[in-house]
Length: 313
Image 1 (spheres, rainbow, N blue to C red):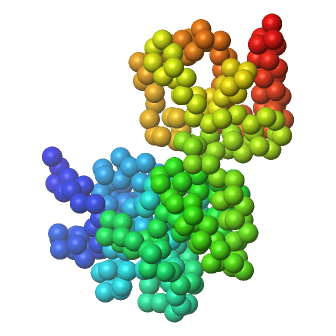
Image 2: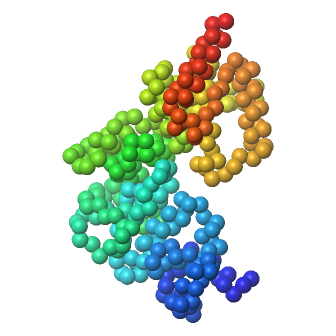
Image 3: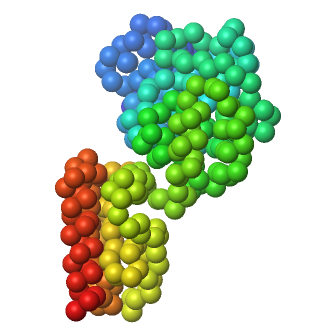
């Protein structure tokens, strides 16, 4: 062990904590320059050994905790973290989110940090719309999804809202929140998102695939269809039962932070073979396909035509 291994024993170090360990401002700056210490935000650090093991999403969560740690060290009351900050704390899927710290407060005046990366939203939150997560105040899953929908573009909002529903957000509570925010900025977009959101999508790719299918104006498939095979049940992302045609989105590695092992891939192919023995055909698409809509539509239509011809034969 080197003499600096202790830097990785703690999640966050305030400047005063490092000073208590004998480090001067010059020492701290030197460690940052050498890549041994990471400045999470001004006045708050983490050992590079810990930081480098975090995913980008986990690093953004840590930035929120760093903001709160600095505020607490100054004696400030905890703000309510909202919008994308709350979404990060809830572990919600986010597509191209901003890097800001979002807080909601009842007035425009607050002792909370005025740093450029802090976005303050003025508004009154009901007691039922606020909870604790790892010791800090955060908007509930339902309020968070609605707030994100008010500032996001439609597809971004759909991804976050569908994940919130998947995690157990109450749709009726979300409808009530939207109703109470009538005439507020972005509430029309939030209403549209909630009207179209499915609680069955398991990844951002599935959310955008469903959105694309709707826009194509083709017969809609069922989501998360379970088919019994000789090797056990096989769950399809999308299925047209009457045609025995399926659509699968392949994007797990990008959005779940793991690469499928050779064994997992082998077992999946075995189950797929068992499914084809029953007469099913599968079209697999990837993330890049979602941005070639005309081509994707034609591929899906061709897939359905082939399946229809096969069934008619």
